[in-house]
Image (cartoon, rainbow, N blue to C red):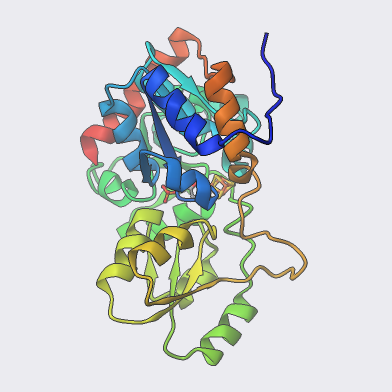
Length: 315
Ligand code: 13P
Ligand code: SF4
């Protein structure tokens, strides 16, 4: 019987550490998790690094502090391990916007195209794809595809448009987007650039084209983090989910990070509502209850594994 009552006397962080030892567990966290979760994790990274870490770990249990498609990827790579996700509702607008039946039709309508699919999708969609990519590996993967081979790129049209420009390849794009990266206001960012003329605008490639056009640097979460450490500027306007700023402040505390503002002042739309469903309490509970866990049909898992392994080999 699972109990979700937590005594307010409980030292949650100490209990999580104790359960980690008891379960021989590893906690993997994405940069968009709240700061306390990032700080208790064994490893914090971008999607590609997290997939690589999930593949190489010797732990028996993987506790995934991220969203569902990330935990699913860990399970695809580790069918024998228990993979826990603090909140099963932690989805992603890109994964939600690419239902498997519609994706299947998309593929069937273009039988001569290879399907390169962004990792932000369900295991079912991965199983129907040829190669998975992440924002940090997409360019390298596309550059290895023969020039006469037509490509379908799904499900992020903004990342897709950016990659078409970067690689010079024509690709047919699925019409999906990230609700967080589409929230940034071009007008307010221009105002910030005027107010802070020394600040560099650094953006995730899931942002819309006008934001990317104004950007001084574009990259995956990990690349944004390394950029601010190598670059000589002291102020940055950060056009991605605000969770990454926690690691930026740790890596270069002397610098200033200004979150890129959403159009709507009254919302926290630059925080991912899916990522933020995970809390320290839910992290503790999922380890205590060994639930919720990720489970997959073996046939889907095996097919999805092929497309993920192609990504790992080509990245
Ligand atoms: P990264 O692979 O850059 O960490 O991106 C993951 C993501 O979901 C961005 O919204
Ligand atoms: Fe998905 Fe966007 Fe959240 Fe990333 S930030 S998990 S792409 S909804």
